[in-house]
Length: 146
Image (cartoon, rainbow, N blue to C red; front, side, top):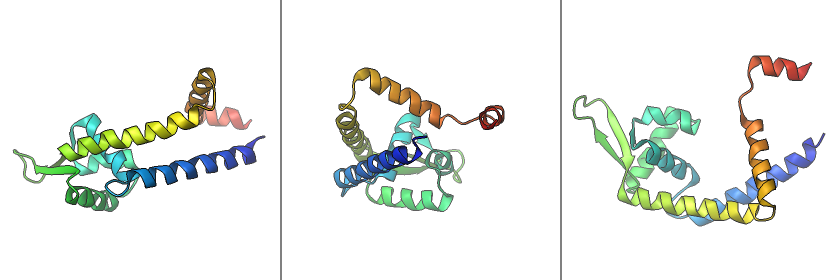
């Protein structure tokens, strides 16, 4: 098995990615904020609680993240016209610009890393990572342990 080699490569890649993103997004954006902006770009507007499954975090953490983002004019919070208890979160103009900037920064990093391997191997890598990240069914998990 290649567990140890994979773990070392994965660790190095994720460390380099995190360092790159932290340096290039700063000071106006964090990686977590970019994740929120991308989800909002896809969904136009959402309730804060709807963001939780996309971010795999707690409601309190989402609230704190949104507070900082609103303070930095990355998002808008608006009350629902029909039910004042509902708050809708959406991108601001600055948030749209920062989304584009953040995605470009990430794409530049990925392009530089992936340029070390052929297009065919890039496709193969994406395919294999997809297989690794697809949730296993109980049936599949049982058959792979036997």
